[in-house]
Image (tube, rainbow, N blue to C red):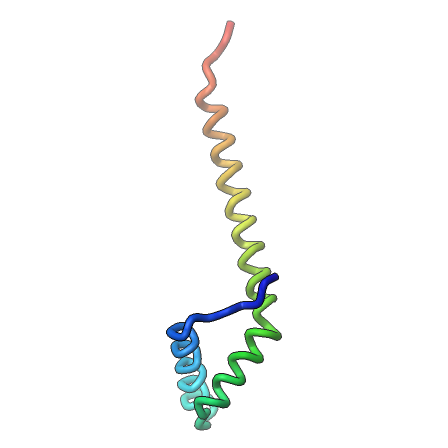
Length: 81
């Protein structure tokens, strides 16, 4: 798996979410540097789990859709004597 990279805008958004979470749920101030460091940790240590789950979900959805397409193709068959 290639390393997970975020754009500057994505990283800013995620850091803001972490800071708001810490303020609301933990009543703690999370500085920009600390939030950035925590995001990097989550990305490196947990990112693969979420990435793999996304792949698994995409594969399951594709299998479901392919099965539906196969059924629809069978329905298009013309009876042959």
